[in-house]
Image 1: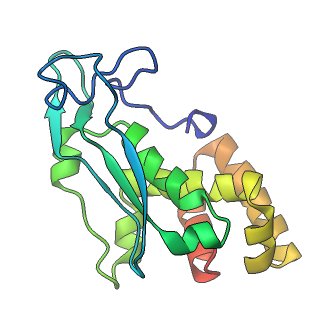
Image 2 (image 1 turned 90 degrees about the vertical axis):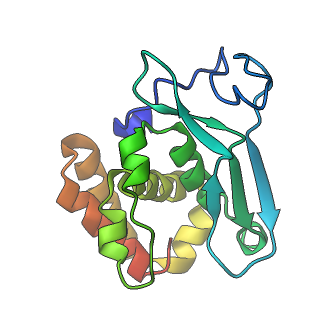
Length: 179
């Protein structure tokens, strides 16, 4: 995320747990209740918390009992990128207002869905991860010319942060069934 200049939420720290306040008896720095679960489903990955809450003086929301559910088929394909995508949602700066106005994917609104900052960031990080860490999946889904084109586009995006370039990358990868 930081490699792409995406903001990490101010309520996340590796040294202190500001999440899970309620699950830890209304105390900070208790055990982190973050979970990743592999589930048998033909559906999409899911993430969410038992509760989202604000901490006075900080702008991002915190989570109580954050859970990521990942379809087992990704594991059998040797893919970790869906976990990376969902972890971005856990780590990224999100306000209560943004969480309230979130547009779910409904099958026909993909571009509107990925144009939301939260989904845009998660998709771009996921794609960058595939290019860096999942060469077998990348080669299975994209031809060499497509990989070269997208590598150039990703490099351009990293330098310019042009939203149109990012959306084009996401749409190409979605159409190629890379993501």
